Length: 137
Image (cartoon, rainbow, N blue to C red; front, top):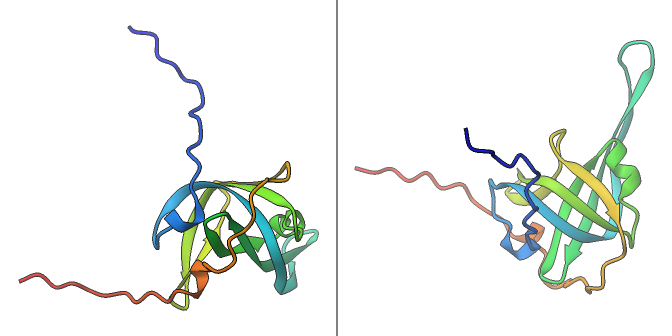
């Protein structure tokens, strides 16, 4: 049997302007522009009371910006001005617009400050998409 390499694949980094609705598996390096807490509540769930926190964070790179939905522990990492790497991120649709999210299969890591300037005039979360069903005869 031939020896197969079981090493880790090098991640392919995606730019924000390449994101499309319904896609997943993205790895991006982005700067946090702003963070806004949208939900914070305790959940009596077993012996300890767990906090459920959701924040909407505007993140961007040199090609554009998008809203990232940070959940629970991810909220602490999303400090304004910091640079983070989002691994295995996916696009969720919320009221017809794109939101970037990282679920339990992905990772959010704080990384060294990036040298790029965020392109603030291309916010992909402001573009409204409409689901169109195509019926073929």
